[in-house]
Length: 249
Image 1 (cartoon, rainbow, N blue to C red):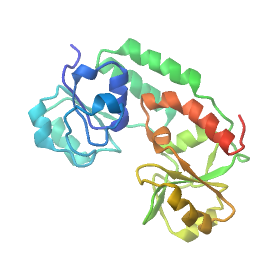
Image 2: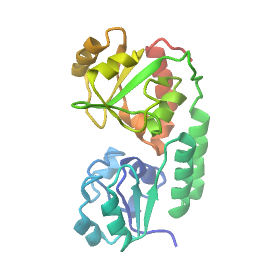
Image 3: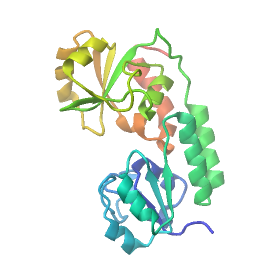
Image 4: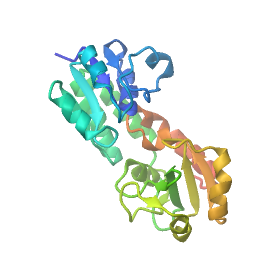
């Protein structure tokens, strides 16, 4: 029998559940689960992704919890696994994200809808060439201290899919950088992500001063880091971004 009381503690997977048509089955989300805005606003909040309110979750009595290895805290997820069925996802590539959509679709009894989403993503996500001639990108996710998305991350995979070259692909995960390390990388582009740190236009000058030869751009962090049905929007976003930067498809 398909789950009847779902809690998602991963924003991108919450959006996926709604896109799979499970509005009435979702009984709990985190405060960072903001999409789709018109349908998620009335759902009970069970804390933040790394600060779950376990008592609130107990009150909601879920029969399936969707979690993620990177976004949630291990001790909290292990505590929940003692009492509930918890599906923990872990992905760093686009194929792994598509497999996750398929797995979740099967778990919640929406296999047909999941396959439809996968097909639409596959058909809409162009594969731009990414090689040594591609523009290099320093993708900033945090400030004070500076942190970038490096190799082994989903963001790194999305940069490659968009036809860019990660200036920090030789490092792993999300290393901290000092200004000298950023300068030494000589990136062609600096992408300031809209999340998790809320970079905005006011921060561009700071990085332009550090790397005068680089072009500094504010980018949509959800497109680059959400690995659920948000991928449906990635193809058009990448095309528009490349056009904006004069790197034509």
